[in-house]
Image (cartoon, rainbow, N blue to C red):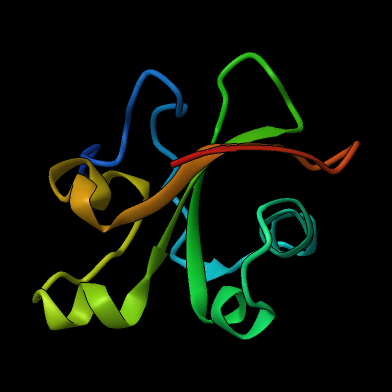
Length: 112
């Protein structure tokens, strides 16, 4: 007897992301990123605390994640619901910073 199971869609896949795994939702900025934005770039800590990030793991590097930083309030004003990293592919104007983080060494590289 076979059981009819619902098939999962594979729409969250990319060359940077293994098939079959879903991407994480937006989260508050990791502490090393907040430190980079406030200390290195000189922005206001209150402004940095309002920002959100979406990440995607790099395929061949275990502790390194590509990330995009955006303001969720501005995204909502523009009628965009950011659900994962790929949502911002079609809305690059919402990306404030893009770069990567090594979570093991806390290394951060960001570009505007």
